[in-house]
Length: 149
Image (cartoon, rainbow, N blue to C red; front, side, top):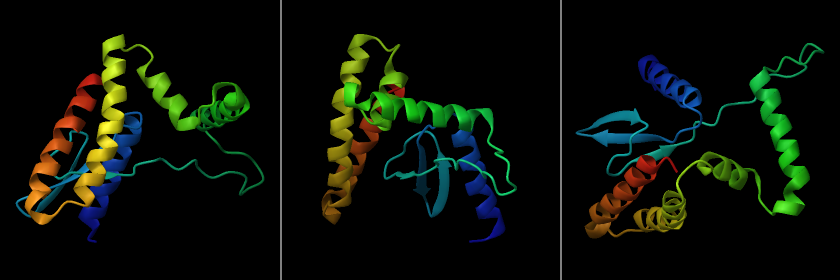
């Protein structure tokens, strides 16, 4: 991987962190690779989960306010998990969709299961049906993004 490519990947990851954990897609078109928060046909999601930083290498905690807040939220989520039955990912989804209209929340729930099935179908598609599977997945991802799911 050349230096320019590494810088592009780091920039995309940084943009993804700044955009509050939006999904980033790796798209290939005419032999060129690009990264975008917009889905494309045949896109591959890229894991842009930020690291939690360095802690106590010098004997002092050097975590930023955002990391401390995330850790507190995680501990709170684990404490109420027996009551809610939700893990961290489910709570994040609930929080993200809280202000959406009811119809959008319902459509997001449908898209959640549809996307899982379509991603599986794309991975296991025969060469002759791959384009159709990728197109269906693209349409669902596009709608998911439009709704702010």
